[in-house]
Image 1: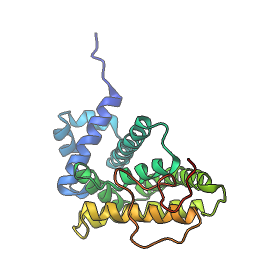
Image 2 (image 1 turned 120 degrees about the vertical axis):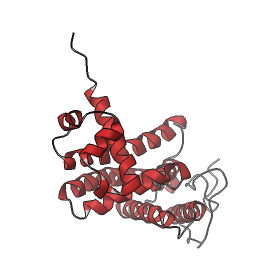
Image 3 (image 1 turned 90 degrees about the horizontal axis):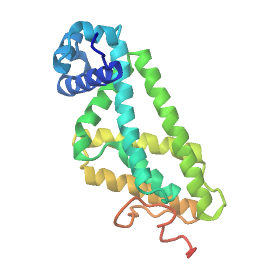
Amino acid sequence: MPKQVDHAGRRRLIAEAVCRLADERGLEGVTLRDVAARAQVSMGAVQRCFRTKEEMLVFALGHIGEQVMERVQARLVRSPAQSAGTALGHAVTEIALLREEHRAEARVWLAFVAQATVSEVLAGTLKANYAILHEAFTRLVAEADEDADGAGRLDAPREARTLLALADGLTTHVLIGHLTPREAHDALHAHLADLWERSAGSVPRGGHQPPPGGPASPGTSTTRRNRG
């Protein structure tokens, strides 16, 4: 009886090999032969899964995005009753890849971003990913803004774009050592705290820090009235 091959599992195995090699030597150093050796499969197996190197890279990029989104979803599942503002804080923190255990993932992600500047296919994949994130962030900002007092003071699409750009920028600053992960985390959540103060109709205070234990949200702003 012919051996059954788990093609989906093999594609994920190859994607993980691509990411490990990209972390070590950049995408320019990723070859089909080296990927096959790292994944411990034959060259033929790699070529049966992916017709071209570009197709393999696109899949690997999607694999990274899926891993990040799985972590975001896991945070939401653990606290299903959390507010939209808290959910947004958790999501943007995961996407920024600030924790030490995600440092390699951040390096690989930025390698793909750099390659996307000269690859229309990779750029298209990234733009599609960002569009999905922008839609989700827009929804969460709008819900959190509505929860504040129903006045709808925030431009949700614009704020979502700002958060995505901030998260990406902080990833880079931590990787090159300009900021520590703690400093980047504080900058991100200070921005969120100011965002929720504007939502509640207060003037943002520079350097406002979120309360200990998690991201700032409309439910934790010190200027918001008690809805107790």
